[in-house]
Length: 432
Image 1 (cartoon, rainbow, N blue to C red):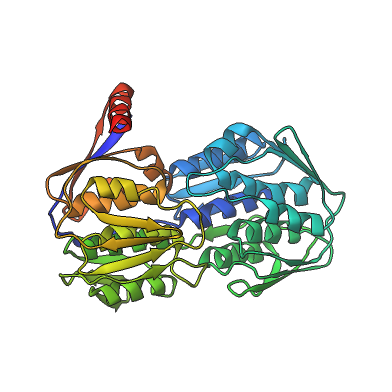
Image 2 (image 1 turned 120 degrees about the vertical axis):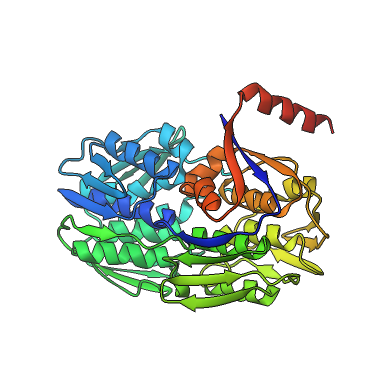
């Protein structure tokens, strides 16, 4: 196993290039099932989740081959429409193959997804949408079976603008008969990227990026080449890191329109952000000021940036209130930040963060992907040395985070350690 070691107190300087968006790559990979032949995807980050999705596609009969940052996916034949529990356990985004499999083969079977560290994230809305298009759905002993001789267009209202449900319905509706309209659809940039990919394959989708999406079904789709959008959450993470650590960096390949909520809060806290042709320049302007943050579906402040922003606010002057409205259990990083000296009190769906003069390095554990990023930022802010375990969570969504931060001057590295060492740490924490 590995852990990340950080010696804090070094400002970040230089430039960093943002990789392709994890939350765009995964649905686009799933959508490749819809076309017979080879799809070529570019700007694909080397992430644990991408590797898991590749394994799943191979399990279904596809060919998934990487050449640098290019993926070649060939679904000339679908050998299986069943996704084993192994994949759902490792990555909830595996559910995204349900819509494409159903649309292409008339059948999909997969294990029921379990809970997630940051919240339950039920798939009821995915199933509601597919049922509205005529799918017969059965749940039995932890499995979901979905069948349809032919999907038909329908008007579907989502009770919550779920990104995954919007994506699954869009993909299934692309090969359905007639017109499907999704109301209260998710508006994230990743939805737009998926729609652009599907349209290049021959789909007829309009309204992506708004809360009403219209899909006119077609008889078949063709494989194409596609370049995914840059990862706005990775970009936001580096922006927050620069502001929190007294840095001055250029975040290359960032799409400004995708980052406006993060930019607004960083400017409110006192950071200087300049828009450049190649991306965004972020300059810290200490002392930073306390700000209130409330997560909301896009175009609101992203829940995937809440933990990183909280790390920054731990040393901001004044008291901040961070309110989480998207996931019910996304404050698991709070106790780890408190181990480093942060003053945070959780009150229901909000965390009250009182700025302290400094953080101190400690042994901490990443409980999920974005919590891990927050702890890395906190470690770079802190005095002395911080040790972050649970690195496997970070590897799911950040391509070479340690290497990119080292390129900006951070004193950060990875070390191997025995699993028993981590268990000793956990046992010691339990006794406190």
